[in-house]
Image 1 (cartoon, each protein chain N blue to C red):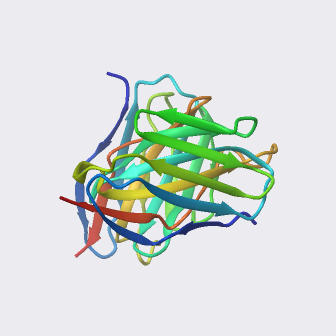
Image 2: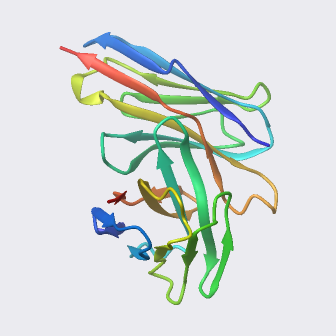
Length: 110
Length: 115
């Protein structure tokens, strides 16, 4: 089955630590996105990539970084510069038929 | 700046009722509109995608309509079931080269269908 796989499902970060969230797709989609979901704030765009080796900042990119070395993979790193990283992170890819989302990673600062 | 509003914020209905969820957006220059379902702690599942040139889409008991000029979409759920209980999200993709496919989401409608 084609889809998007996010791992891990749960992630705990200590203060000052960088952590990386994995996102893999086998849909052969060029465009991929990272959104952050917070209670009462809806989903907000962190980074997007429309093609391999290219990515752009979204609305709330500060404290995050990404890479797009392969079409199938779009990992998100949450750096120590992100002051409030506790949230639900969703990866997605897009085609003419719309968006497909992964199952999400819940990140908690401990 | 595009803004999306969903009404009501929460809805509780008995099983078997037909119901309507509303979504409005401020900028009518959209490429498409997509309805999603989200179960607690899960990702988003796409329900229906309506292109800007279309008026409605149907899938099983779900029907979504789009009135682009008035900035409105409705999701109609027929004969609701307890398994329909979830948060329903409306999202629009703006038209134009600068949109880069970004979705603007509403806050969602939390639906509870009780037996």
